[in-house]
Image 1 (tube, rainbow, N blue to C red):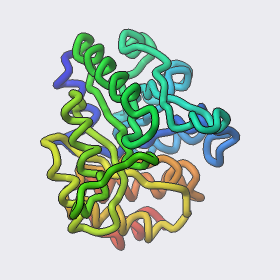
Image 2: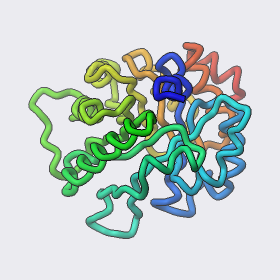
Image 3: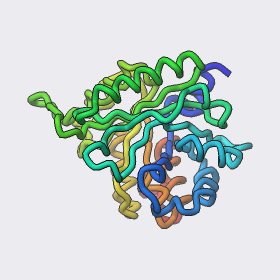
Image 4: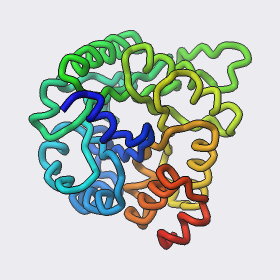
Length: 265
């Protein structure tokens, strides 16, 4: 299978509902991940496109995605809650040559721009991009503008989120994740920053279905190609319901009200 075929599976028609569940490597116990198998089964039933996880999780649970349209992407960046001032430094814990053998279909890594370790993380993303290309694997970049040395250009309403997306593109990523900027106008600038799909993040879990879906609807209207949302989904009281609603918004262009009614939220 070539890269283009894999990319179409992960982002059908350039759009995607991606659920990252890699949080257990950084912080555990985590609500929604203590029974990882049940969470994955709920996400597969909901029809999400991608479950993004650390390599051990993909190796152990990829069989749950068999005979479904859900695929797994391996996230190779990690830090934990314990290293103090080094906590923003996402190190690589593997190589792209592991992906297919472990049951994955793509690679992912993270950069926190403006952090003290930005240059090392940029270098790591560039290297992972090289490996992904060699193995014909789609490359996903999680790039966050949130470091203590962030230097925002005057007049940049995106607060460097447009730069984050552009960096992912420039380093060879096929799609990027970044945070919601708070309004459609500024997020449209983020979505236009690069000619690759931009997936919007969810942030800390709230359990507020209407607020989550409204933010996603606004992001899609502003040019987002989908979502990459973890805690708002796997820690939700109705994991399958909120995931199905997100699928409706992203792939069926449903309204918030239509999705909530159809999914029992």
